[in-house]
Length: 593
Ligand code: ADP
Ligand code: MG
Image 1 (cartoon, rainbow, N blue to C red):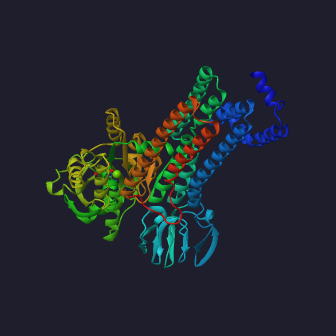
Image 2 (cartoon, protein in one colour; image 1 turned 90 degrees about the vertical axis):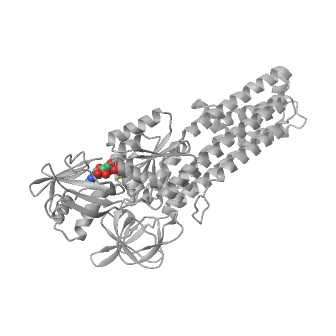
């Protein structure tokens, strides 16, 4: 038999010698790409589909089944092309996203407008965007009124009105008016740049599901080879043996998994959140608990001073001192006190020795006095807050270590919060508040949002400990936060989610950023991540089922090698197309549920 096979291989027993010659040339050409991939896989000690297909092709050729060998080659090549095409489509959806910003922008220098390349724009530059123009930077409008379409960044399909003071994001489209914008974040720092960066990373990183997919694919190939060996030993039927090798196709999961991850990240980016890479997408799909920071996350992040209680001196002077101490603060409460002082036209002095103690407050030296602004832990002799202030946030002011008064701030809950919390709970997620604020305020917020659990009065390391204890209890949790004090907890949670408008370090420490600080974007991101997971799992299960049934039929000689190749490529196509359903549509940005 072996002698016969090799004789056939060299075309000696073939009635018409031209056929094997043509076939060998065809196989050599067709198999070349398969061979190079198989070689690369073999060198990385990875068992792959190309390797097993090559074995099958050589085996078919060896027993003189030239047509079979050529057809299998054609099928494998078709599958590779399909795989590339679908991945390209996934990447296109992303490149489409990247190529969007204008190359040249109009900038105002003194009184003239000049055209400069985008990469020369720096923070503080004034850029001019005409009607229909694309906004190139994140910044604040300093002149003009217009409406802008922010759908690429926030997913919000309704254009929003902007006027002096409004924030606009790179990647949105100006519609009717002309606006001048001071650049606040440019290039990679802008919300758009961060999406692009995230997407780039997503393309290069392999999520755990991907590694699992590779392992599973390799395992299926081994199984096919073992099944083939068993078939040959039992039946001595080489054709059936080849069918067994050919039918087991794991490409559907090997190619379908990265495609699903890529497409899901692009889709989530369209809705207004960015996921830093595939591993985080995977983690997001598996969470069972969402922990929220309160101030700046559940509340609007734009609190307002409603009352000033002075222990002795003039309230305005107290506010002026507090504002001076907060002048370097980026905490929403600090910003509110500074804004309040400015609105009242108070003379705000200069602060020295500024120290921010996350979760507590600030201290600074103002006009020779040590000013402390913060909670009870920093100003221990403050009188107890009255119950009427429960829903409000109270900040105490100390002068040279003595209580001098309090500032009461209303920090309204974001209008998106209650809908988002309700929706997350409807998706079966547990919710809790992890806050540095006092318990009364936290409970008032939790009650109005229907949040399940509250942990209040926590310092940053206690927030971290709270995350650890949740994880130790077996929960997989996402932490949503905005502040410096949230950074450690964001980094430690299974998924750290930062509000786009929050502190830089919060965004740095997190895995997902809600660009426009809209909590509904989180709901949509979780939904998409879960959908991607379902698709990948379906592909896993489907591939295993098809392979096992196919191998069984093939081993009993019920599947010819060509038909086996057809089943392989057909099922692979189905699974890749299943993943491709996640690719966001081109022209119109869309929202998920
Ligand atoms: P959350 O965890 O809800 O975001 P924080 O931990 O940021 O809240 O703040 C907790 C508490 O610490 C605030 O309620 C406030 O009393 C005090 N605090 C923090 N930062 C400041 C600040 N810059 N100025 C005044 N008080 C502050
Ligand atoms: Mg906060």
